[in-house]
Image (cartoon, rainbow, N blue to C red):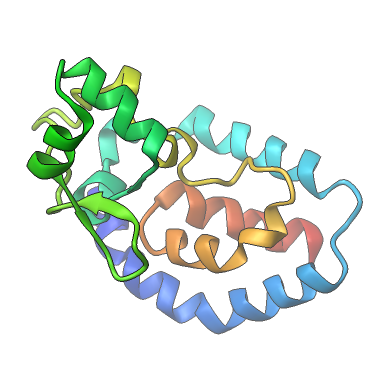
Length: 163
């Protein structure tokens, strides 16, 4: 797995143009069963992919934190939301709350998340490959292919199935 993760940025870069063309075509005319296909591919991939072996998303990128995330997590820490923000977050170029640093502060050496039960929505939904109207997040998916082995495998299988 580690070798695959190390190769992922290059593999994704090599496939970037192919993926962009594929998603452009998909946006113009998505198959009627796309959501079902994505659900199937997502479930099949995560039967064989263990996020705890990887955690590359937590090691290399940070999620966006919604106001609801801030409220929930700060409550978990018995802090006021502003205390949580000051301690862990910053505002990025797009005016979103993000972590002050990566790897994620809440990631343990065993790849377990110390706030798993209250983790941000973006973490719960990552890599977003089982999302409805999947074709609408193609730019995000192209980015995630470079981070997440499962997303890479799902997109490759999707290209084979849809053509």
